[in-house]
Image (tube, protein in one colour):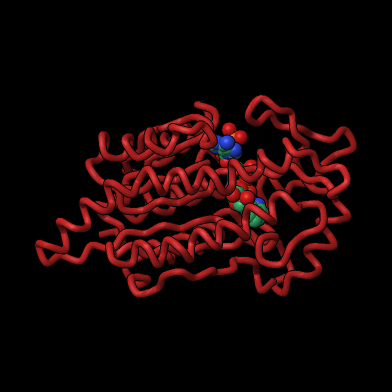
Length: 273
Ligand code: NAP
């Protein structure tokens, strides 16, 4: 018996990194997962890992910033698994610069992926959630649904070089608190997990060559200078970066029945940062 048996979860950006660890964790507790990634190959790897452990998953790939993506994502859950119980807004990337070098395109692209896309996914889910919850309540059943929005300590405290990312991630906290108020009547717990420093592609050490990744048709620099990694790590009370699995465990807490009376909260998963 898993804690999430019979639940259906959307996890955006779950082809790799923290999103993938979230998909695997929720699936290990019995949830059926709609996996999303920009590319097919990483999504198929996540699905294979879930299926090899006896779970169920389908893919809904593509860029979360495409205007009709939210509708497609929600439809994928309802068509494949006839339900929708958990939404994790995780997909994203960083595109850093100090303010004098930050272009409008750069600022907007990061707002689009970390703020606009979660808003559209939640709006797309609202019809299913309202109609289904009203029916459950009329039948005298309280079924709790879960939204977990992924933020960052950059959104809570700011971070030099990340005015776009910090703006998007702090706005996502406003989205979380507002939706907790709008959807309380439908028994939806809406919470936020703000990560500190988690070891993924986003935070790996860059070599001299300066690695880039292609996201939404753009080649973007990825990673952090080794000396900065050392400096950040020194500020973490637990003395190390978190693993994607530890990050996923924080998200999982907000998906369990034990969190049914917790809503509108921000949990920092940052090793004490
Ligand atoms: P990651 O390893 O780079 O993984 C990001 C995932 O999101 C990838 O699967 C990527 O797809 C997907 N993605 C990116 N843009 C997308 C888009 N437009 N549409 C659909 N999928 C998209 O990064 P991560 O560290 O796991 O980050 C996950 C979340 O945690 C992000 O929201 C990030 O801001 C947040 N976060 C991370 C840290 C950290 O220390 N790592 C700290 C604070 C917050 P592809 O595989 O196709 O590129």
